[in-house]
Image 1: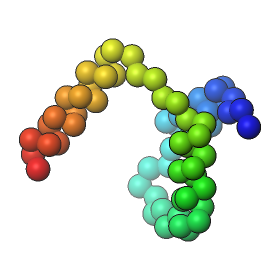
Image 2: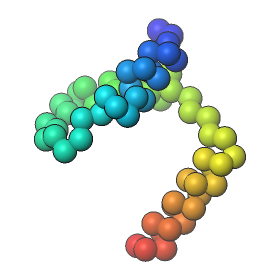
Image 3: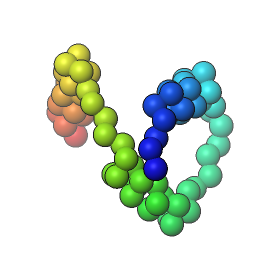
Length: 66
């Protein structure tokens, strides 16, 4: 199964479609397992240099706080 990048961008990454402050129910464990297996197989994120720096700084900050 090939994931259409436009579909992801339009439906999953569009912040205007994220519902804020709404109660979210638990995800059944079997569905979560399937999601994780799917993500491991098909999702290959790539970070540009600016994002790498942000992620590095974020994790350094939270490690320092803990």
